[in-house]
Image (cartoon, rainbow, N blue to C red; front, side, top):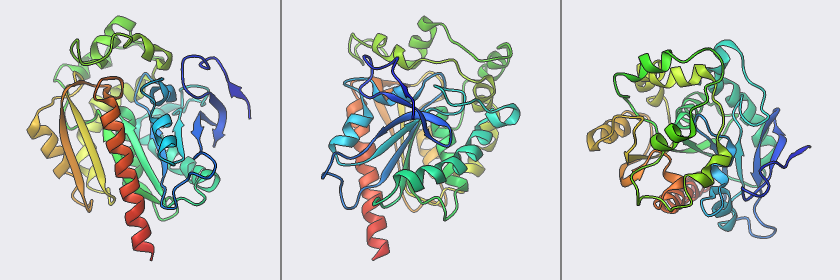
Length: 304
């Protein structure tokens, strides 16, 4: 496999060009001798306008934390990100990517899932919508045992669909200043080295997914989440500028997972859309990985 080294000095782990199924991304195995007997395989799915480096910013790295807890973790570059080939036409939509990744993750499971209890998906923003859609359609040949999502919800501000539709054809690249304003919460909710440290993970985004999250996802979200049959961990930021957010919205979103055996849905105070990059980020990641371990433990008990 060919390594991608351009991010070597600004992320904790190097990206790999062909991680599985032609997708680039990052893989961190458990340290030798430290993998837990009841470990899950964690697969992290980034949001729009970010690569897999989103989960690997030094001092904010989900990959580092998973390794320290003895869990193998994959952070993939979705189609059209990193060196992962883009999907064409409807394939680049949220549901198109979910269908593609559902099949691709079967290969990931065969390649990386040995000695683990099953897959826990962690998804942020559009990646959260895609992860949810994967969990909703996966069969027995893709052993998903838990879903942890953030930065996604039921409704967006009314002007978003029209504004997003005005983007020209082709990949969408937001100006850095605008993106930072949208993705981060108020001053004081993150360290001074942010947002600059996050820019290594910036990327153009397929236009179709940007349109889908404010249109098709909103229309179909209720039916999608109702098909998820695994435990769910959901967090939404108080100062998320991409979604309509309050306690009632979070409650309604959690309650829409009518087939899930358990749903932990909460509003997180004092933080913005990209919670991983804020002061609250480490707490969020500890909760997500603790949830993943809990899902694996439950899977172990069910198998005995």
